[in-house]
Length: 271
Image 1 (tube, one colour):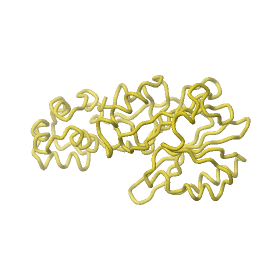
Image 2 (spheres, rainbow, N blue to C red):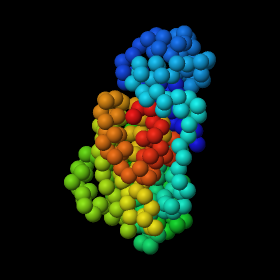
Image 3 (cartoon, rainbow, N blue to C red):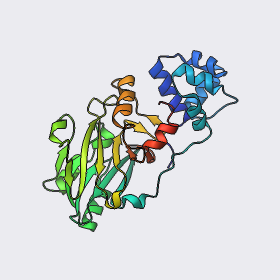
Image 4 (cartoon, helix red, strand yellow):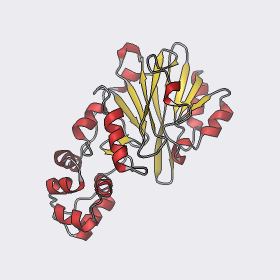
């Protein structure tokens, strides 16, 4: 799977976050404005770029930006460590979005995180596997993540939909987590991209597999979500609530490929 944000997307987001004009960033990169515009729009590198000066001007980490320019992709451990985790990807137009299903193999209790554009494949998987969908957790209320809520509610009687700010963080137990079979789920607020942004941390995997964090659009592999609410709030929320998790934690973004806390600390140029 390709990165959700290509090189130009990352630079454009950083420039918006820093309030830097296109011409100013182009001069720092050693490019003409037309060449820089091509870089932002397509991710294509027109010629030699001064990555260090550009990164410093727009608030990115120079070495990490250069690694991204050289084609970095996240390295993720074999997913058989988390055997009861499945990603579903749906598309509408140019927008491709991920939803995630987790379950306990003993009790067959399950939880779905976001619905994507169309939950029909998820619903078919539930029926085929005999899973009991207990919760539908929403990472935030943007349409591409919640379009299938009514369809899930119609198909699964009694499924409990959880989102922020209702229920509030206190409704997800701080110590023991919210149970889905032997799995336990914790809530971490991650606003900035959306005021109702939530990251869900799942522990209790068989074989003591590392935690899994369903992060919505707070962070992508090598990038962050657009700061619709506040760029600085978005970045700080990721630092405080996601990158503070154990390095081996598997990160499941709303768009693009899986990654880990360790990969993002080492390679994400926004941090």
